[in-house]
Amino acid sequence: MNKRTKRFVLAGGRLTAVAVIVAGVVVLTSDASPLADPPVPTVRPQPGPAAQEFVNWLVRKDAARAAAATDAAGAAEPVLFKTFQGMTATEFHGRLGVVPPPAESATTAEADLDVTWSLPDQTSVKYRTKVELRLVEGKWRVHWAPTVLHPQLAEGQSLAYLPTSGDGALLDRTGAPVAPDLAPQVMGSVRREVGTLTGTPGWQVALVDPAGVPVTVVQEKKAQAKQTLTVTLDPPVQRAAQAAVDQVQQGAVIVAIEPSSGEIVAVAQNAAASTGGLVAMQGWYEPGSTFKIVTAAAALTAGTASLDTEVECPGKKTIGTRQIVNDGQFDLGTVSLRQAFAASCNTSFSQLAADLPADALPRAASLFGLDADFTIAGVTTNTGKVPPAGTVPERVEAGIGQGKVQTTPFGMALAAATVAKGSIPTPNLIREIPTTGGTGRALPGNVASALRTMMRGVVTGGTATQLAGLGDVRGKTGTAQHGDGTRSHGWFIGYRGDLAFSVVVIDGDTSKVAVGAAAGFLGAI
Image (cartoon, rainbow, N blue to C red):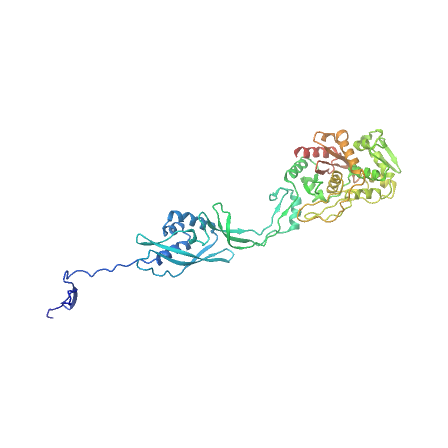
């Protein structure tokens, strides 16, 4: 092929294009440099990719890289990190709106960001915020502001997902969760009655301050909560009671009640006693001489005796067909009622009971709640069985807590609390669930004050002097034969201040072991 060359010169001095045809190839050149490459046009960067890069790192919850896509990485990273930490159980989704191409001279741009946080319960929180971009040294970057994450987010704040439990709880008297070792027999009964306290959880998504305290709630789902219940057991008192009974070889229990409120503050059983179930609240035992507070109240109410009435206290006495013997057959001769009570003179109180009507002791027992049928949330209780005594032998035995008379440790703790308060407290174990049953009736006339005086005498100069150094303790000892008469339960009931209690040592033989347990209990609190 022949070589041919053509030249075109444009008028007005403008660019002269030269077409050189060489071997069939057309090459465009300029007059100045016929062989130079054509100029490369300048490409202006767009903000959209920078915005999308930032959103992509947010989706991945990568605080460092998301911050690096902003114009203030040092300020952005801690806020992003804390938000991702606070929203750890959620997923972030961001949908970036169209970023309009900026004018040739523009250095800022803006786009909408539709945010969705997917929550663990399959619900979501949605809102729209703004992403501002700025041209920094020829490169678009997200302009950092907390409002990029949420339109209301302020400096020093972050976002947080805050689950709210719907579960109720069992708290003790101090307001703390019930410890696993607190009165296990009682708490087992409580838990069976109240059942599960698991509720439906809820949540909040909130703007929180640096301490994590919500400042503004963005959205929330209310928990469907179960009730939190307060068990009236007092941990220090319960521990003292448990330690006291655990020192006893035989089966032993202590029940303690706050007279002013009726709240049950301790129910303790040792291992030997617990083989029979919750005997502290339900077990039937002959009360022995602790029942003399009832016999004394019956005589005081009937007007047949007063504190200073002189009564006979021989070592043994036959009343009707029943022979009554004092412990060791001690003989005091003739003494005041208060002295006979302090010494626990069986012959004196059997005679008082023999001289009363058949229904006198049951009526007196009702003054102490020993016939009450309480419905106490969390526990089943018994108090006392004191049937009418139609014959003299029945009254003689009942007057000293023998024969057909039976009470429970709980019932006798209630009786002691009644003396302390002057009326029957309404016992309670779960504060939020009121007890039903019972009367709350007051002791008549001067009965309460007379009993308090006599019970103090038991400690200062009677059968419980071991307790004399433990404050203003008032009480009554008891030894109660049962079965074939060869075995006896040991008792002490009483109160100190606003704490009434009963101690029973099953087959303890005498009241001394019960008094010793009471000393350990009171000494520890």
